[in-house]
Image (cartoon, rainbow, N blue to C red; front, side, top):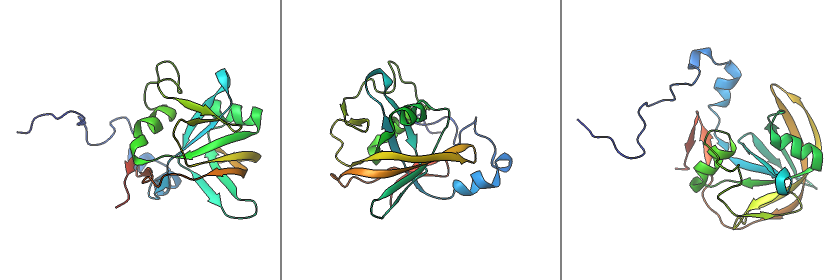
Length: 177
């Protein structure tokens, strides 16, 4: 008999998740694609908002572009729509709790931005010490499935550490092998 270890789950899988056979085929296929986990933020002061977004793609060009799927009812979308800009930060393996908090999967006493230090940029708040991020200007958004396809132009880039990225695959965070 093994004893319980701190951090161990009672269930191997999420007991509240929709059974695989009841999920749409598109959702099941999306789960089989490894996706980068990013944090999109916008606004300032009390109008700050953020959302974990794993459906992010960056296209090279002159200028570079960003596309992502965002919940049309999210506070993030309201802030992006109002300000026309947002910041996108790729998350690292160490950022699982941050990703869960901004995805609404973890309690956030005091609000999403409480407990961490944030630097305000012209595009939105960036976690203090984050050295890799992009500042984006909204070009368009349109319904895409149950989401909004948000397309933006990259106006500012910052590159720093080469921390291993946080990936999402089949409902869980994964590491690069």
